[in-house]
Image (tube, rainbow, N blue to C red):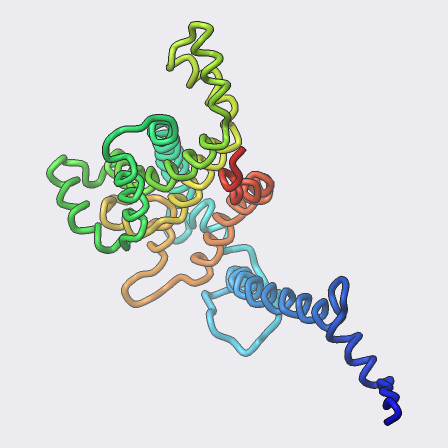
Length: 305
């Protein structure tokens, strides 16, 4: 029997070209990826824009049928009251105090976490000792415990130490939660540093402390920066633990401070939104400035050799 001449119609060829290509991405895949990214960006950005809109509205208006991002009769009065208070209403502003408390507490916490984790991670990376594997598993397991489960024992411990309503109590609470993850991050990076460098220094007469401070730490600067940044950003916006430990307005961090705009029966939505926008500006600037460190931090320790 004569062989059948199989021909492909132009429509089938066009569909195959659109959906399936042997090399490179097909147009359908490219369109799908871009459409997904656009939708995800809108979902992420739109709520932030609505917060900005609410902060510009007068008279604490929350719900309205107006969908404009810049509302009618837009005003900066909410920002002025958040920053400088309202003398005519006998209201003072503690906004800068809240920011200072947050910066000081989170910075000290990040430094303590980084120092403790740097030493501990080096021990886990370089030394063999009983319980090493179990210790690593235990550190990882602690990150799976919800923070709410630790509030009661944390409060009892700090109350017995008379550290309730103190910045030191909150620093201890934050450090306990951030050290395990920081240890894992730094250990993964230490594992990528060749042991030959340390052995050569030890042969030349250097002590283990000198090797750690003069060789390991300088080589680990990117990982240390990432560990500090992760710890800082984790404590910067934390509310639940701070709500339990701190109860005085003069030592409030900013997450506690802005909730003072929410009273029992009324909420100052305009000031609440304005404070949220003002607080987001520095952390967004820090995030954009350190984005290259954050991206590299996702792969630190993932490749050995």
